[in-house]
Length: 552
Image (cartoon, rainbow, N blue to C red; front, side, top):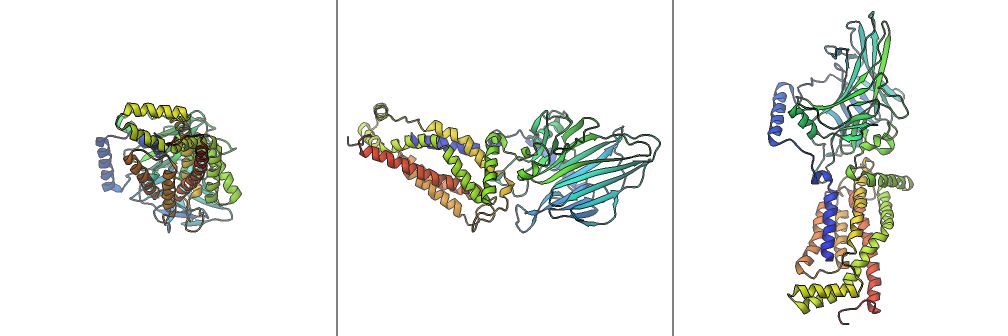
């Protein structure tokens, strides 16, 4: 019974651990649709590269202390962004690339201006910059790209980069030399393919794709698969708020994000001239667009207009993004256990502020969570300890009744009644712990704060697997130790399975981030200490005659 209960606990925990997306996956296109998409992409690649809409970049580079950006001089679009303080997932010697327009991966930021007829007034224009390379001038770096005057409009695109920040301001300066006011709308877009983020494996899959936050709809994820369905059906049925006066939208992936900020924290909304229209879709070139159309104030005859918006493109660091826009921290995706993971990360962050090391913060957090759950776990372990104490009697009953299962069950139930043992007493407390432990798992797994964060000695990056596999080996040892503290199964096959389980789990944890393995190791050590103490007390009770042994 105890073995089955333990197996149920691990099975349910593992199922939730790997996420609801694994159990209830987002609907994906059928094979025919996937083949059609691949054919369309290959056709586009044969014509003009991986994305038919993209032309070769004429680079203008901007280097700050946090990023290296590449702006296409001709279009004024942001075509490359390297995060200088983060290393690549697959190669620690290289910097992490967020935006890219290479053959392997497309992820860029675009913008355009539409007139009252919905036509792009930038079409056919060529921007030029004063120089090809820019660096910080004080705490700012400003890049102005100017286009020749056309139809009475002189348009400049201005990018402003700030020291120590991942917020990039993009501004249009429009001069109207005509004799009548001009009404324009700005469109800000993130464009990317659906390829998996670099370094993603089976054990570290997270949501990657469009997201929207509005006061009306709150935080909404719109998977690529939903946009595929819309594209193939010709219908716009994906669920998200399409009009808003504030909020933000963009694309997220594990640890990193890019979002257009419609209303900065404690600032004015860019939608002041009318409701902003959000448009998420898959395009014919197989790229996915997360765009917002922003109505601008009319440019008066002989007058000027400056219209800007912030783009946050960088890590999902809670302390940083929470200051950029309201609820931007929701982009750190904890999935369906957000209600548990968010407060647990808050506590983890506070502990880090206290000890100054994320590894020790994880240790302290595990101890605190273990202490809070002590009443629940204590009930489980007392039940298991009693079962362990009467194990000799169970074996004696098995030998006495042999194959008479009915008599065996009746004798077992009478023994449980006499000894006041509830064979299911440990199940509910174990199940109640699962949401908390899974929330803690995602709080650690989703935190970019642990990326490149050292603990001690050989652990120099808590977000990567243990390079020497020391923690997984210790975890396997602690799991083996727990099997000897649990009631021994009466079935030899079950006993073998109990010994194999630690090996199976340790192999999985060889691929897990070291921070997660550290959490499980500490939790196991505390569990062993708690189980040993309770077993010792129950054994003392047995010797005192409070629990009968097989010979009485």
